[in-house]
Image: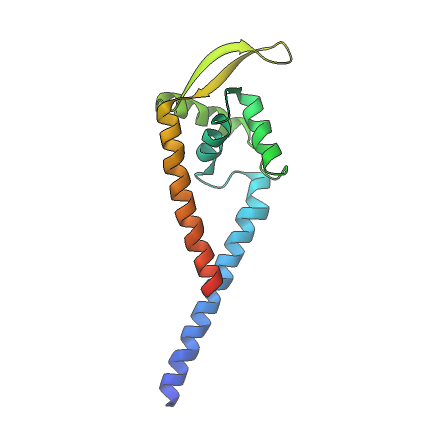
Length: 141
């Protein structure tokens, strides 16, 4: 093997290692650091749709359910939750109705619509595709 070809192969190997290092750092940021401060971009709608798939809940209960199901890693801030719920209502993915919470407060309950279930399936499919791609890079790099 000539010196030039060897240098090219070494550069490629270093590039693959650098890519693997970047992906690993991004993975750690998303899994450990970001959820404590904010939800990873684009994930809140998916999580809300998934939680509402089990049945109607009010806003605070949605946030608590996400927190509980994520082993208390993910925290949904009110400033992100209610705009996201409003978006679901506007897009027809959820409906809402006033009711009384378990603490006797008047609250708005959100319920998934058929269009919301269809959107959930679409978003889960997209998430799984991206997740598989990231896993392939991590396995093969």
